[in-house]
Image 1 (tube, rainbow, N blue to C red):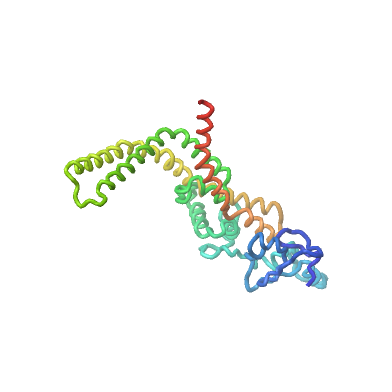
Image 2 (tube, rainbow, N blue to C red; image 1 turned 135 degrees about the vertical axis):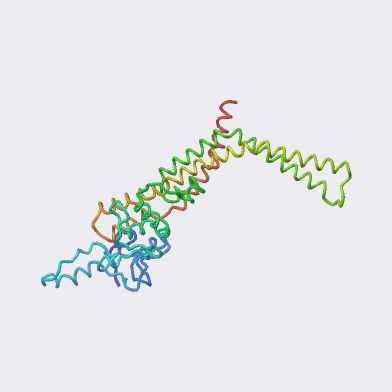
Length: 316
C-alpha cells in the first residue's frame, strides 16, 4: 500500500516518497521507523484490541460521504486515526484492577477513565485513594513511597516543582548538618576499626591470654561508649534530614499528584474536542519519568560536597 501523503501517528508528519516506513503487524498502523524505534513499540499500542484496526481517516471520510444525504442521526466528525467509531472503543487499557466505572466522576470534572490514562500502571492504587478522598472530603493523605523516597518520588511522578523544592530542602539540610554528620561518620569509622582490631586479636587463636582478654574487653567497652555518645546526634540527624521532610512530602504527595492530574486533563479538553487527541495528550503528560529521579539522586548526593569544597577553597 502506498502511504505517501498519509499522516504518521507518531510524529504527525506526512509520509513522503523514500521514507522508511514500518507497519504494525497487530493493528496495521503505518509509522516512520524512527518513530517506532523511539517508542520501542507501535505508537498505537495502547489501543491494541481485537476490535481495533488502523484505517486511514481520508478513506473513512470517502465511505461516509455517500451516507451524508440520508436522514440518519448525526455523527461526531472523525478527527484522528487513533479511533474508528465511538468513545466506547477508547476504554483505557489501564482500567484493569480499577474498581470503578470509567465514566465515574473522580472530582474536578475528570472521569475515572481519564485518571487511569494519566496514572497508567498505578491507576488502581491512586484512583482508589482519590475516590476515598472525594467521599471523605479530605485533601491530605499518607503516601509511603513519597515518605521513603523524598524528594525522588516527585520527579518520578513528574511533579517537578515540588521535587525541586524538596531537593533544595534536602541539600540545605545536608549543608546545615554537615558538622554533626561528620562526627557521626568519624565515630562509625572508629567503631569499624575497633571491630577489625578485635577480630584480628582472635584470628587463629583458640584462647586469648589474660592480657589480650583484658584488652579485648576494653575495646568492646570503648565501642559501646562510642555508640552511646553518637546515638543522640544520630537520632537528631535522622529526624531532621529524613523523618520531618519525608512526613511533609508524604502528606502532600497525593494532593499534588491529583492536582496536576486534573490540570492536565482540563488543559487537554480545552485544547481540542477530539476524543483520541485528548486521550493521547493525557497519556503523554501522565505516567512517570525514569531519568529525572536519577538526575535528582546524583544532585542530592554530590552537590552538597561540591558546594562545601568551593566554600573551603574560597575561605582558605
